[in-house]
Image (cartoon, rainbow, N blue to C red):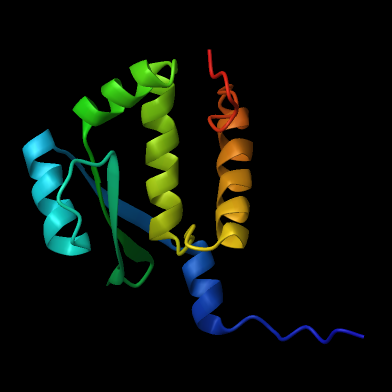
Length: 135
């Protein structure tokens, strides 16, 4: 039989906390510089997440910062035959999951993260962004 540990007071506090996130809409040059500086990758990217998890007040935690490049989002949406607004929302959710501690380094992590994204987007009326034909 599996024993369930009681939830810690910190975990309960985090679950009920208000959250805040900073979102920067960056140019291609800005996101390329950030991608190079923080990830060592010298190219534009669609979204960067900078987790923080700092308590701002007794009941509010700053999850971190997100940087999204609308130029890259539009370019990718066109190339992948996706609706730009829907692709932007997908990347926003993807970045938020990173701020919450999710990652996709391993195939198991990627599958878990993608299934969450698909489920959340479905609730917004957006089809699976990983399907072969998005439109």
